[in-house]
Image (tube, one colour):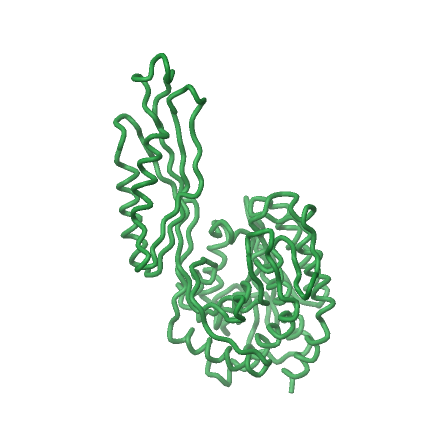
Length: 390
């Protein structure tokens, strides 16, 4: 059977997978480092084209280009029949420039370490090899698209339109974010809104002319308290003002201040309710004379499981079992691009990448032994879509 040939080939690829991963992890690629993210893209493109796979780029203005790779069909725009089997992942990381030099890729005790090793460069490498396997041996029940985006960690401001356009023509979507530490995949995620509020006050000498000043920092403090009070843990709603700045000098009443808000929610209807309350807080002047504005900088939609997505999960679960894995579905408070594809109606499953943990931290790791089995599980799931009625 073709799938057995594919999985036998994948079983031999771990050294090559790790070599590609090492090079990728050791390349800078923060979300705002377009050159670095595009360098990772160039590595992916060179590998795929070296396998005979067609790749096109959707240029990014400020962030990394989006790459679309094609297996089993012409490089046709998304939406053309037959519908595409989409393997998705993002190339950007959260780390500052120079982090790979400070913490280069290494393997120790069966785990690989380095910036972005699990979130989500190992998932990108896995997708590369799965595309290569189906191109080499055939066996996919329809055209496949590998979508490699460049700005997920900041809400996909340029990638979202590309992802949504792809989702309109998608048969199913596998998002190769890291598998949970339990070995599970993600079947539901929170949505998120990332916004910035700016406050203008009035400067004055804090000793000699205090009463003439209007403190933007005082207003910031009052707004933070009111925003945090909107948190409702029972409903899965959290608000966090995670970054603040402001002021001119210690002896000046602050003429400006800024706060950045992270909102997470579960139910789509909760988004508009909480944003309305945030807007009311921003519009109110707790300290007379201050003026404030709110700007949304990035946004994720929640991943909700449709009936078709539930069937996809059950099918993947069976394919994983054939690869020797026991997999359940989990809910995650983290956001991902999978919310965009699910909202477009594409049956979506997330976190099917190799297993890892402690993402966004210096201790981030990948379980090396999960690389091949997770690739084999996805390959089996893809090959069996037709039989599963998907």
